[in-house]
Amino acid sequence: MSNNNLQRDPSLTEHEVTASQDNFFNGYVAQGANTQDPYVSGYAFIKWIKVPTWIGTDSGASFKQLSERNFKAFSGLTDMQMDTGGITAGFTGNELSFAKGSVQKTEGFALKYQEKSGGPDTKSYNEWVSGIRDPKTGIATYPAIASCAYHSSNHTGILLYVVTRPDADNFQSGPDSSNIEFAALFTNVMPTKIILNHFNFSTNEHEFVENEQEFKGYMNIGSAVEAFATKNMSASVIYKFYDENDFLNLSDFATTIAA
Image (cartoon, rainbow, N blue to C red; front, top):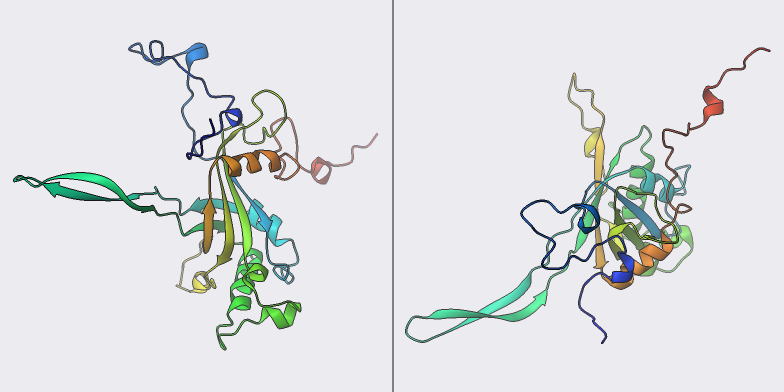
């Protein structure tokens, strides 16, 4: 029977262990094949599926790659609460609750990043916001600049957010092929802030800056999104990890050894 409830597709979680009722808890932490590993936070990626074509033209580098690799934190996910209501009866007025309204979704999110000298990320975000609504005139300037129609599809993006297990680059085929713990696809995404606050000054303060951009976007979750993430996340679309057996740009550091 088809089940459309919000749950993980078992085919995407081969690493999970199904424990029987009589062997999972026996007074101590289960071990061996019966172990269910705890969830470990701190491993996640963002991947821009789509951004407006007119973004990033002045930054000197790809906006997608800069923002994906300079990504330090994602926030905005909140528990979804179902609306309920109660009715009372009898002399005591005891209440019985029933499902009443809809479950409210997250309306947006925020991305934190390390501010770099020259502000390549910030310039692109500020270009994006001001192109949709110029601060001085209140008009959308991108249609005339980019020679395209004014339409939400031309000034919004699509972002995939993926949380993984600690084997973060293990996007491969074969057994245990999915290391994805959670995936969300945000559509109709646009930033909402022109970021200037970090340029404030106070004498004798010299700090590195982390900026946070706020976005509005419609969150899509569920087994279809997780299947999409599993299919589209691979070593070819995330940055390469250089482990202890590798050395990044070794030739840039090596000196010529005389014969």
